Length: 170
Image 1 (cartoon, rainbow, N blue to C red):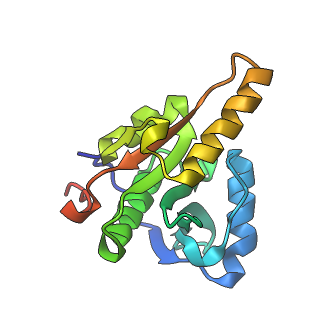
Image 2 (cartoon, rainbow, N blue to C red; image 1 turned 30 degrees about the vertical axis):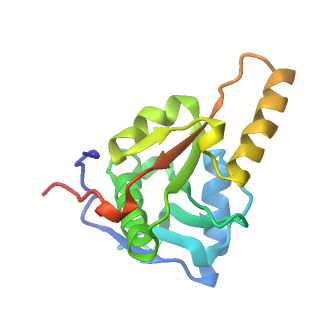
Image 3 (cartoon, helix red, strand yellow; image 1 turned 45 degrees about the vertical axis):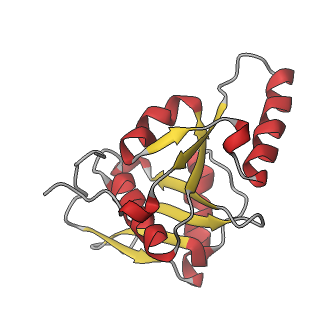
């Protein structure tokens, strides 16, 4: 069961609009995660209801091989620890389960595996990966060989989206 922390009551969740693109890009760059493929229609945002500021992001990112990725999960530093990222993850998982019976994938730095495991994601080997993720894993491994000691990339999969999405504890 995923973590049961709840977002602060002043946080609202909504789909992104074209006007949010700059805020999405800024948050992703600040978080130091992959800035490629940041298309606003794929995003769910957490917004401070009092100020209107975008404080968290996440997307369901489609790939050419027909796989989908839970990606761009980020919360601005001042809002971390409130369960915002967890709520974004749960909502995106529910959306994916409603739209598709296919597995859902994600990539993360290896130390973050333990963050995603409670949501039902498990690390997978290249043989289980769709083509997009095998290519990314090979590319990262190539660059890692040039800079040994760096954190590795993990590819994880949610195996049972048709069973429904983990719900927030009340």
